View (tube, one colour):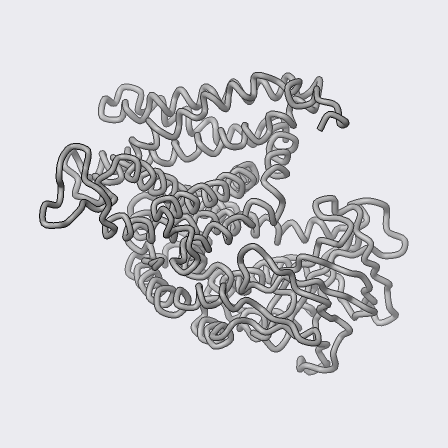
Length: 594
């Protein structure tokens, strides 16, 4: 059977030892984040995810969601778990205290989110979407709308969604047809169809607030004419209580490959009453608050599923007896040695470990930079952090979700035939992980965003926020013999990344297909270099603080990091070859030749 252990110890190490939070020294929110407080949060999150959410994971997948006359029912136990999690405040960690939230930084909340997702990804989606909706309303809505909606969103009484996709358009939101007609009282009449709406209808909360992209009759064509509206499933009266239904209906739910306990709905708006969020025709600005938050969240989903798969694979590899070690019997008291003695099984396990722990460290570091972009008292520091997060968001979303699929597939392979059997639980993680590379902007779209928008932004200024610190790190440790096994591979891969960046900049200007053909390989290369940088920073910190004889936990970090440098990072060489081969080998085949 699949097993799950929350990564509490690794998270504590990253928060208490690895992460440098000096950029926000003196900020009350961060000064309060003492190890005593954060350790207690992580310990409690570990307990509730292991004992409440994980036991509902497989049963939720087996049962799925059902629909009857437009009403969606979630799997057994979900409603009770949602109420318990909401009452305990696990669904509002980053929400402002004045709205009833916990007011925690993202680097703390995202660590908790990883544990929630690891234990039950489908369940976590319901809470995660509400946080995204809260962020957009809190930042862009009027005070009247905030007062009307935010308290009940934060308490968990009401949930939120984001409604972008329509039957005829997905990524190209400029094609949206949903209409918003202005009414005399300042509200809008919303009519249109939306599909693929996660948590669009369910039985967990008494009301659902839909953030809907639509266009008014005189709006400009394309993406410049889109506005954002909040449309409650049930109207709210002047006293803030639930009133009549708002002509919002669920016409069906999708029967999916994975995340079956998360209701993915088709939603119909028929003369529904909605309220403008932000400025007219500036809806994408507000929606991107949700989308960027969601893309980081989806990257964490890839990491979380990788961790859960690794948990199951390690336990199985230590218990399953199969053959004898190539170098001689290791367990003479048993009829065979466990799987973990075999080099190929160990190769898969340490690959899973290296990717997962590297991704967790990258998530912790990037989440803190997100906090700096919001909370720093230094405007220049805020801007630099914001630009760094903007640069790395497509890398983070895509690379970590690629890792999620790779690692969950390896988890099945460690089990062999038993991994392919549904009752053992491992195949669910791969099915769940597969969506992460698709939704919130496919990984191909993320790659185009990276090379088409982020690289050329402000004459490459965003890149400098990553390239310059990495260069300084390499220079700092260039003569450090203890670090040479890590620094040399990092330096080589960074040079490849710089060469690829220059190639795309030069060739992409003359022929955009060159940039498009290189985009996905470039993004993966960027992800590998970013993870290698983080692994090297962890190693440097351990060697500096723990000396030559670190205990088992830190020794495992050094060895796992070295494996990443020697076995996984060299892929940047083949990726560079792919990029430098140009676009002709992709674009020369005629459409009629496919």
